[in-house]
Length: 462
Image (cartoon, one colour):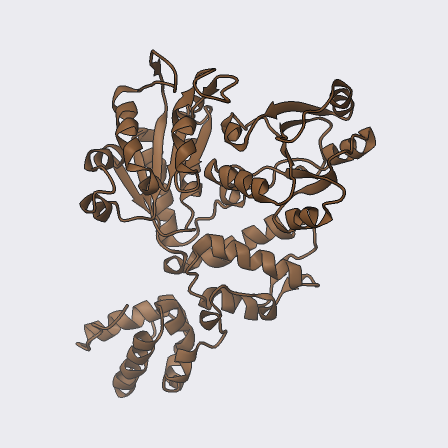
């Protein structure tokens, strides 16, 4: 959010109950609120780049707020949501605040001072994903270098990887490192948009194309003109629309709903999925010809646990984003060990959630282990259960520490082999195994190489 505040705000005004009068509109303008009225939540597919907030009128429940949030998630957009609620509906206002509303205001409140105060606090909510450019682990650095080459080539790219791993981050890098960097970056989450709306959001419509189409609307293909279009979770796109998407990619033309003639479009497509599209093709859920069209080049992002060198740098980066205003600026050693030892099934998104919870609990300058609340508590112990099942690490193994050149003495080689293999067989990953053994992952890799050289089996390594 813009910490310095705004002097004027452009807002989308959604009120299905009653229109405001000319006098009320003038009061809003005097408070610095420039209003663009929309008739329904489906009209929120307009270009949101120059919108500072959305004002929503709620009646008996928060259903409309939930619908707007779902649409914004689909558009990969984060905006303050201000809810107007009748004064006798206090419970609805409380539910709206719990549901993520930026603020709640009485539906009959038109005071210039109240709205001007609101404007000063408006601004875009920080998009953590777009700011999380952390590539420290060697595997991440290789991925980043490859992404830069792909960006320069301008080819259609498919990003794959588990949920929450940072596919949108990489998509933005592909855009910003490309010749199209000065053009727009438009995103659409195919899984978060209702099927009844996604065709309109993709292709746009002409004025009068259907009931409620009071003005023309550009779809995301047109909005991305000269830039990049990011279609997240493309594997969830309705099968009926896949052929239309394929036609746009082949012909570089789009026809709005209700239009008679096509419009030429120029954009670079970046798609992403956590779904096995090959399996989807076999299951007749995804078109094979579309798959080959969108996967000119594939980039696979590994899970966070597979790139442990990113965990602490990313945690510190996110802490700078979230904790700058609350005086929290670091982690204790025990907290760092817990962050490194956790498996992160939810990847970067889960790490972000864990840190935001910690900031709620933490009252000092450092986050401690007790402040870390994980989504999977059984995986979060600072001393994992598998450590108890491993024989006590040998003094010789601890003594070599991180000295990469330390040799394995003949007298202890077989014993170290037994201890190392026990750790690898019971630990969820190599990082945890190394921690249980009291050595670094790098030393563990070196010792495994030594064991191979001496003819000892390491076939059970992960």
